Length: 306
Image 1 (spheres, helix red, strand yellow):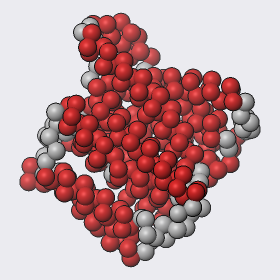
Image 2 (image 1 turned 135 degrees about the horizontal axis):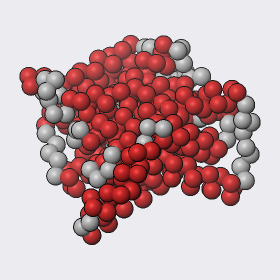
Image 3 (image 1 turned 90 degrees about the horizontal axis):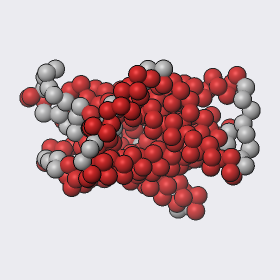
């Protein structure tokens, strides 16, 4: 393995550990405040911090022309505003482990998109992997108890839609990220996402500002909440998106998507340890099935990208 490949896959591993921990911290946060409001504030604060870092480093500013914004706005919506907004909204209505496993559909969706766009080829190994991974996704739910009245069904659907948005972002974002400075692009994506969401959140911001003290009066609760907020903004937003955009500009989208399969392990451990969530045999088996399927379908044959 070359030094470049080692850097890429080591970085992808770090990203998924940071994202995996975020399932726990986000679950704590959305238990106190509206998930869409939190997503809005998260990107705004991360954008301000990233702007300060970028200015301090005196990075070359990209040309702000029509083409730049025509790519920036939809990518910001897909990768951040919609992707993370739907993820957090769904997380509030389902478990962190279930959310982690459902987000493993991102590589499947990404592979479908990159094959359709002829960024990568569909081989027999990938086809077999599709079947294994799809089976795992289907069986993660108890089909004998499947019902539209299921308490987690709505949350699961929102998480899946968020996964679709992120898969589109991975495929369509590669070319844009290759052309421009990663720090500036990430900064503009954060701020654009915050602006897009702000139109819907002004009243929620006012309401939260007047009720937060009431909702988190216990010292231990407020300490945990603030710690989760700081981690999510710095560790799971600013750092992860910067690293993700950096790697996406250098590696095939399918490889970036593949790394997501480490998330259920991290999320499962933290959900069990901190949230007392059970990890049943079916969840473990299906997680292994999904990960095995994606390893077969993506890793051996993902050699071509554009």
